[in-house]
Image 1 (cartoon, rainbow, N blue to C red):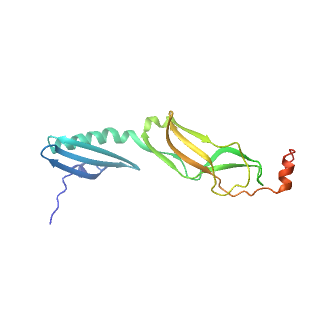
Image 2: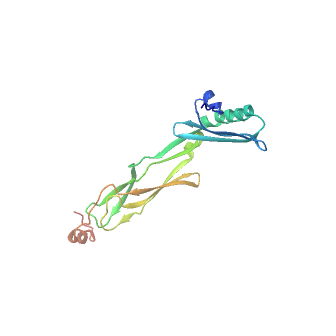
Image 3: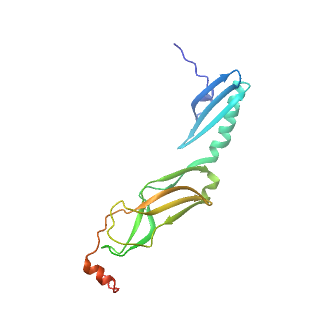
Length: 176
């Protein structure tokens, strides 16, 4: 049995990698086409075209116009050190910095990359022992004022609680 692929764009454009063509008497020629550039995927849907050629031309035009304008922007790397210290009031270590628990990337217009803002939400002080992987706060990612993602800030190591004597001395401003 021989199968014929009706998506002629697959041979014409290297970025196009699928998906589904169709024809229905009442709605005409249709296509859901996907194109890929790096980690970015663009989906173009055309419905009700009078001919397959016009349908394909619309897809080709949209892919050529929009695919170069966007990219997936890596914003946070997993394990990235967050540059804000937290005072540890009762732990053996006096201060610490957290790390990003996960990575975060976002598909966006290339010219809008400078609009990305990162907001660090951490307490100034923590008491008690700190467990490795314990959530300390979060890193909020925004474009203008719209939140587009959040990543937990966690402790990279365990920090035990200081002994009674060390905690007692700290109350008088004496550090060990």
